[in-house]
Amino acid sequence: MKSKSIYILLYLLLSVIVFNSFIQDNPYFKITKQDVELKIPKGFPKPIYDFNKNKLTPEGFVLGRKLFYDPILSKDSSISCSSCHQRIAAFAHIDHPLSHGINGMIGKRNVMSLQNLIWRDAFMWDGGVNNLEVQPINPITNPIEMDETLSNEVEKLKHNKEYVEAFYSVFHDNTINSERILKSLAQFTGLMISSDSRLDRYKQGKETFTVTELNGLKLFQTKCANCHSGALLTDNSYRNNGLKADTALRDRGRAIITGKDEDNNKFKVPTLRNIEMTYPYMHDGRFRNLQQVINHYADPKNFDKGYDLSLNKIGILTEKEKGELIAFLKTLTDKTFLYDRRFADPGMK
Amino acid sequence: MATLWVAMSFTTKSSSKLAGKGKLVIHFRNYVDDKEMKLDSNIYTNDAGQPFSVTNFKYYVGNFQLRKSDGKEFVSNEYFLIKEDDESSKQIILENIPEGEYVSCNFILGVDSIHNCSGAQSGALDPANGMFWAWNTGYIFMKLEGKSSASNAPGHIFEFHIGGYKSPANCIRTISLNTHLSILNEKTTSVELKADAAEVMKTPATIDLSKLSSVTDFHNAATIADNYSDMFSFFPSPEKH
Image (cartoon, rainbow over the protein chains, first blue to last red):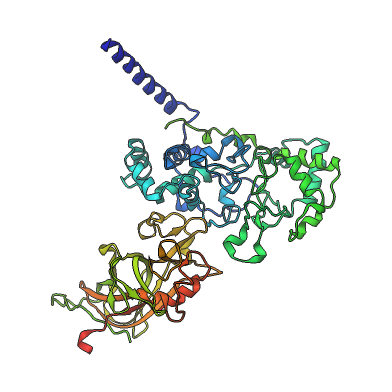
């Protein structure tokens, strides 16, 4: 009886070892020097985030990936960054208008996608965060998200053998501090670059569009590209897009940061890359699908007071035009990015 | 006004090498008016006549700049977090100061805009020190927390968390003090700097804790910053009195 349980124990131990080495040796999860080379896609501007001050290394990226997928970051080890930032949704949160933190507590804003972050001058719907590296402090310390302190985070990692080794492999000494946690996370999230959507490929002559998609592209250029501009499909500004004021959350948006009444109900113009995958939409997730989004923009009667005047360019959209715009928006899906193995959960907890 | 008490503690071994360098140790001593600060137990009175105790007092100082009479300057870009509940934090050291006589000492209370925008940092500027706002990025330059029967907040607490490096409330304040400071080669010069927390609640604006017991974002922050801008003075040198 006793020897039987020892065998079972041995078997379990062995399978864990085999499984772990399978993952570690699996080329799918292996990160090479080439994998962490920063390549600025054609037509993209100069990045705002400077990797020269946070030198990309395979070890740094792997540590960032491990942290991103590890619930150890939350107070009760129940959620990780990836709980609300799902790879298949360009790291937004599919079908969650407002995301939940530990103990099922509900936040007040829709999760933004994570892509092309090194070209963002500020983060969050209100632009309150000024540097990619300090952005994760928000979900980590927010009582309704991960509800953890940075100093406790550091203590937990210092007492975890895997992390002690992982940090050593990156920094070649035994120091674990918040700066190193945050810089490693920035290596992982900063390399999330979408630049190979069907639209990108169409522009490079590698792809053809259907007539519907072409019509959608033309409509987009005259009616939407004023704000959703350039390769990033955002001008990084804050605007009031005419949404009916929400009486429940009473989110003032950009005005919370600037203190200016003129910034009331203004929110960051989000990128439209992978928009098909990042539903629901708007800062409060009020629109379930692209049809609802287009319906909102399709008639100036929908716009609440104080809306951005550039919306007047849109005018009234016919049903046909709405369909064409939606067909175009779906050409912004970037499967190369969505299925990029570098960003997959390595499953090593 | 701000003369200086230099601790003549160096052993006399004046090797006057050319372009020698010395150290300056600044001891921060936190006061409330003319009483040395004691957390929790001591009761003080503000200019509005309200009794209060202090439970927490912390602040950032940095960008020290020492100037000689000929205009030559020593500049340090280092930051220090002074914490009333941590003795070791109250003694800071500036190193590699060219020897000579210095007549003024400038520094900022706060953290300059570059360091507010530089992402993750360690040491005094580690956000894990709790002097950092995550949702509207920036360091909290000064925290003064305490209790007062005059406060209408739950638990009769008051809390002033002051920060902000940009509009609408830039709370960085430059402190300029006259001094007489000798830096000698391979020697350490010590000075004591008084930080009077009572100033947080007075001159120019007298704070009435029954009306204003909490400042934790840009609302009213600049008012408090104007108050704390005259919080520091060097201890008078005994031999000049």
